[in-house]
Image (cartoon, rainbow, N blue to C red; front, side, top):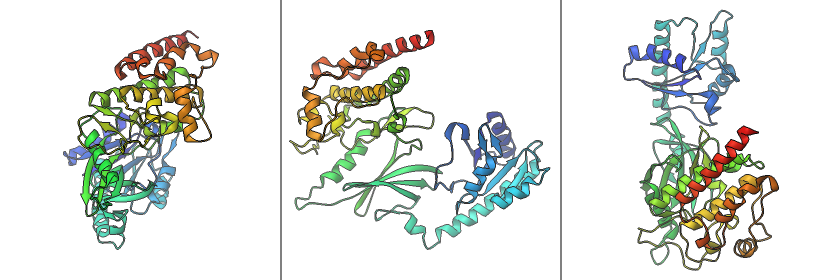
Length: 418
């Protein structure tokens, strides 16, 4: 028995868990806190669950609105709606909106709850069987031509010349994941650098387990395709948080998390080489995770897949040495961190121009921008991170962490005093 329980109250969730485990001791009961996590992502069908228990209300939330949404999704798992009481015929209203059943919770009728859950599970088992034999089932498990049974396509996120990204539901795990799919296009010399870089991305970070680094779940090869299965971030990337200058404490807090991620990958011998807000994702709890290691470089790998003389990365966030195709090291990632921090603090990038080469030139030759007067106390930190010469930057991500944390503590004390 697998149950998804949508409610914000840990005590109420514990009560329901007790009722269910009395009958199904091995039941897997997963909690979804609507206050902390927000709406269930569009396209998610909870197909791995036998039943979804949905509460009628929580602070700032309307369970009936959620029921109308989830009940309107074709193929969504059966929903048992949890009402405070059914004195006003709300149960009938819930069933009309899409609930499989409705249960009053002011005084839970154990037998009624168990009976409803058992009937919903049977209904879901029949629905799963019908879906597997449906005409469109294979099509919904095909991604850029790659047939990946066990994953249901929700939507295409993005695509380019090398790979495509899809949001998918892991039918067994009951989670949303991102699938990155690429085709193996061999050149006449038998080498496909894009494909090799794709495989290397997985090899680079599969061994890293860190709270601020994306989690990769699987790598697979099927026919002429390779695919990565990775963590999905419903709240998007750091750019969504950057609608304007952030308060110094928040900006420094973000920078500290990014620096911590850089420290973890640098200790593993990895350079990211494409640090930017679009490659920093926000988890449900508000913490950050570094993603996209497609341009990363591992010192222990013999395969060198970057063509010499070519510049890879994003000009606005590139260190002077990377922009001029010179050797890079961990301090190059710290320069990119400085660019991100400047943007977090001011709302603008330190350098801009009409074309990429103009921006690259400024990174190497233009003076380091001055922060506004109210942020002048943070200028020494930016000066070290954005130093033109690597030798003048912090010597490591660990040193940058110590410096950022020191500034953060000073800023927090000032904010408390104000």
